[in-house]
Amino acid sequence: IITEKTIKWVNKYFPSTFSDIYFSYNYYKQDRGDKKSDICSKRNIEILVEDSLYYARECLSKKTKILLLDYPWNSSSKLPLGITRVGSWKEILQGKRI
Image (tube, rainbow, N blue to C red; front, side, top):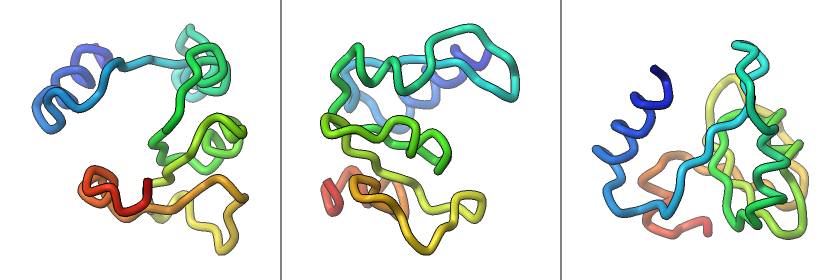
């Protein structure tokens, strides 16, 4: 159900923006699937938009630029090199941080 809802939401708010959507393992729901870091590595993902600092750190590599959406649950005064904090999807789409 979450897969269909996610695709519908992306198509509504970001039509023709993304070439693909990949779904990964969710620790909290114990879903099956690959880890985000494995997907990024296998698919040569160039940019990952993330809201979890844990997953942002996990996916950090020289190939993948991480855009971390700014939320209270991921606040940290210092981010590793390669992770950029962004305020919103609008900011990302305007290319201000890419």
